[in-house]
Length: 275
Image (cartoon, rainbow, N blue to C red; front, side, top):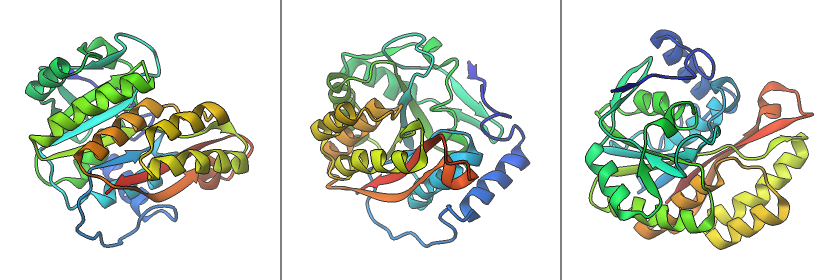
């Protein structure tokens, strides 16, 4: 089956040419990475935002630029289930995801394997039917990788610490046997004043950079940080640490207010790599 795009023409342009131009303009944007040269370090995973490209694209491009010299066979993408449809945690099999840049195949073997290895992950395509959190990452991946890659999409309705530990360990198990890149799709603070969003997110990003999952959840709860994909972030922290990452590095942090100028009610975006 083909999983058709649900936010093409909304979150990002609906035609190939416009989409390629948009990604290019995000790279060259004043908040984008520009033409900086990447050093050849081992990167286990990244965090990338998932708002409309006009808002979060420049920040997302920092994460994608960092991994642009890698050519993974498999990209495992985890993100929150904004609509709460389907299962608590779901992957899917026997499908391709379509974007204006073409089709990307799901690694069904990896999907079945991870569903066996995890007590949370189930195979359920309906869970993936409406959401943008995984979809918006795919054109970015298609534009930076020259080689063909497959994806393993994992969408999370349950974002508890217990789930994150289980899913993170299962992701690491899959990644050990393949040339893999792991992507956590999440925005940070939602609909707060700009300087407050900056301070909230700074507090939450600290334990991410330390790869300290317990501290991450305690800051999240204490400060009530409204990061939508916190379970995806936590799962990827756990997976990357399992694989040998020793720290996260903040590549860029902006808010929609920094980009668009309206600072009264903003959403925060962070680009982070795990090395």
